[in-house]
Image (cartoon, rainbow, N blue to C red; front, top):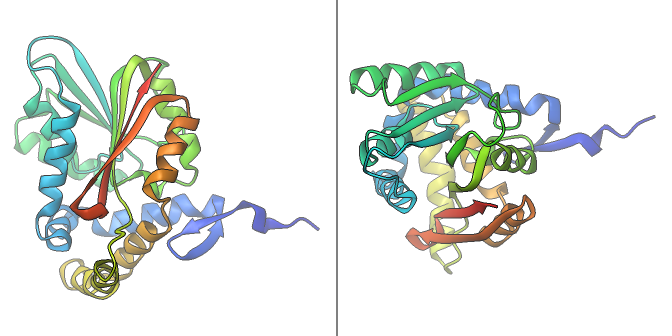
Length: 254
């Protein structure tokens, strides 16, 4: 008799079979796609906009006509892609890959409304098995998405594969607040207020409970930095934002 627990993975605080997780994550995002950006504002009191601005400023896409191709994984509704396209020059192009068809559809609609379809394209894709040739992109970005993949190490390996030598990996992700008392307040807010607001705005609170739980089970900043290094990236670093509630991680493809 085999022990199936060896293939169990985290889905928030639950342990599920690794074959189940992706479907459960897809279900979460299909339910919140239309209100995802509105909920981000409510959940973070608008802070996510500043975090994303910092993230794209750190990427610093070239502003001239120099060709600069970016793959934005788990890019969903286009928040990061649009910032990159607007900050970069006419040579900057962003491909958004997200495993949720509903999120991709929302992103494409937003790009059309904002006149950015020529600079951003959208495709359904899995971070663990990207449908792009080796050494295709100058930069790989992923914001608030890597904690939702089933195998983080495989996603990092794919990031390395599709990046050109000298290309940059950048990840913006919720992390661990390590300030006495403040961490308890943050937990109380996360587990009570966020699911309640999610239920009012989207009609479903449990997707947001999962999102909060997934933050708590994601590796701490130092461990994730070491995972990036183990995937072969050079000069892996991280920078905390808002006392560690969020961190920007960076590494270079060699």
